[in-house]
Image (tube, rainbow, N blue to C red; front, side, top):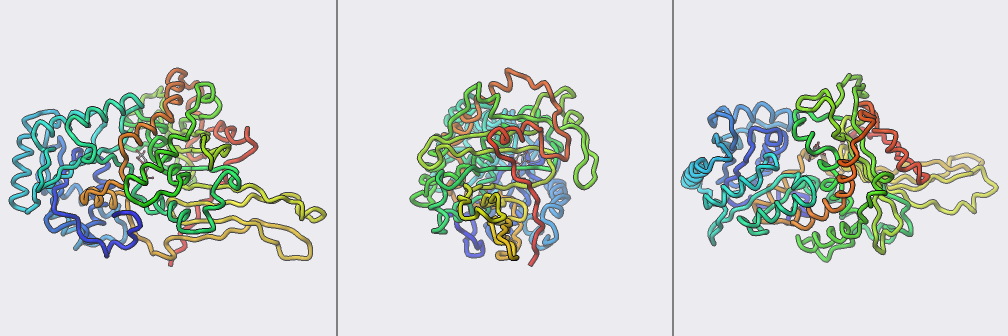
Length: 515
Ligand code: BG6
């Protein structure tokens, strides 16, 4: 199984299969999927009998498709790019032009797949990857079903990976689940959230459950509050049209940020099997108290960036000036929430979440702030206040764990300063470039759904944010744009914590240590 597999060289290659990508001309295929296949190929985890068949509207032959993918792969893989590995993968890439809404094209797809099976011994195992706009998920699934391409036998399997966003809100997610179930059994559906594929996200569980001294402290008795920051310095790039519909809340919070929260707050699962893990994450999501409409006004903050200067000096335009974006757009590019959990472990502990585009840094972390120690023994010394202890789980980049502790400043008087103990992944395990998609694609090929989301997990995510979406759509923002590109977001995000006598942690992105 996927989790805990630290060394891929020990793992066997996936079974023979064809991975069929709908939307092969899009950003995701270039930026994440093909680099992930490259890393899998490099780790010898792709079977010899493997083909990736790209599908899209563009008119291209196999060679043109390979050339298109080759343009980007070097940038994404970086300095460790190896021509030999790329050559092995490239030879297995094929392309077919398709109109995804035309039933006849699916007959052609059947013929093409039969040909690939005959030539490449791929055994009729098909992994369909929907890297397409959500409005097409149901329609494509219907066409695949009508063409008989989703029908499994004892000899072969058919699986579908569905990209996020899974629905636009709770109702549409339920409708989509119901629709997909017409053509697919639940165990054929793989709802992807690439945060579940990130090593450091999985490591949250290891940090908590493999280290006996951590777990006794991991509760409301010792933890004051938690801050989850997923900051992006990039803008919306070529995805303006998609982002206009989604916004920061839909794009990031019910999925990626709740994954982080789920792993951070869950009870220890009985095992790392799919069901045990999902059950524990679902219990966390169940315990989160959805905000009432009144609370949305004080516990939720939205923002949109205006023009500004990034820390590297780059002048960037406002969100409203991005391609595909309405010049009067009300879409939020920043969202922050204060959530609470109604359970034994976490009652009374606030979880502050924030995410946004064009923020100061590209950086994701979870900061756990512990309650202060009593200062009584320091009376009559120069210590007038103790800094709270903190554990910071750095998810990306420069993955690692940092503990801030109080230590005596050398000298004749009693003074205390904050010191950091810092563990950096790269120092111990080297730098293994990965997109987060490698494990997930490999797992799906093997039929392991541990790191994929079940229908009810997705629905619970939407339930948590539904009241915010409702209030925000009923009350259009009056102050957009309300933060400048290159800053940490709108002032109201700071007020969210100040009202509770707290502050967002001052983030300083650490440099990679190097070996
Ligand atoms: C995607 C969002 O799911 O996650 C993007 O649609 C976002 O808007 C991306 O940029 C962030 O992923 P990562 O792996 O770069 O943190």
